[in-house]
Amino acid sequence: MRVNGAVAAPGQRVDPRADAVAVDGVPVPVAPDLVHYLVNKPKGVVSTASDPEGRATIVALVPREPRVCPVGRLDYGTEGLIVLTNDGVLAHLLTRPSHGVDKEALAEVAGEPSPGALRALREGIELDDGRTAPARVGRVGPCVLRIVVHEGRNRQVRRMLEAVGHPVRRLVRTRIGPLADAALGPGHWRRLRGGEGRALYEATSGPMARVRRGAPGGAGPEGAARGGARGGGPGRH
Image (cartoon, rainbow, N blue to C red; front, side, top):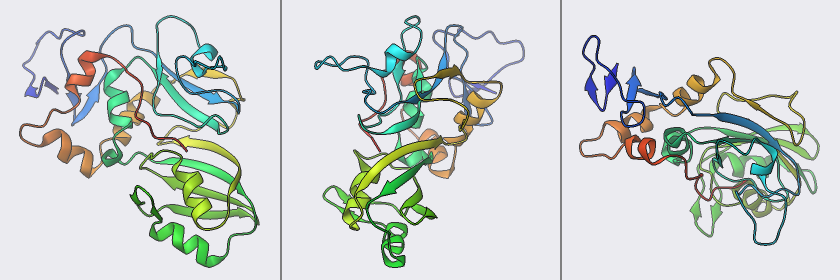
């Protein structure tokens, strides 16, 4: 175990409000008031804390206290799983593309994608903000695809599918890293169970994540741990 990057001494006390703790390189949340919710966002809800247009917000679906923020974004018209938390470390890690946390979605599209369209998605698509990383794509039905990405760019899945000539008709995120729950209905939420939080942290600890956290002079996640959750980056399906 390490505390603030140094090997912990036997019997060393930890300040849960100030110290960053990691076991085997994986951050461990120690603050007593941290909460982690898994929410199934319905269509027609914005994944923000407030909305100037008065639309329903994702935070209104969970308890008001303690205050939490969504990690990342789902489009107004996109459904599915999203994490809400006040855990700044986790929010920081999950919204960094280099940490490689998979987001899986089912996409109902216009038309039946050809093998060439699927190959293009798997190889990467040139978008106006650069080429995407290769996606994992499988056919579920004639017009339904299962697609896995990890970059989290703005409306990425929708733009990729539109680029290959198959605009999205319905998009549902079904998995975030190790988290999936087919029994969680639209508009419902639950706290993460048992080892789910740990598994989510471990999902951010791939080779690129370790390079970032272990690089000399790197800021690592400690700043986020002390700053609290501020919500995720702009990535949306």
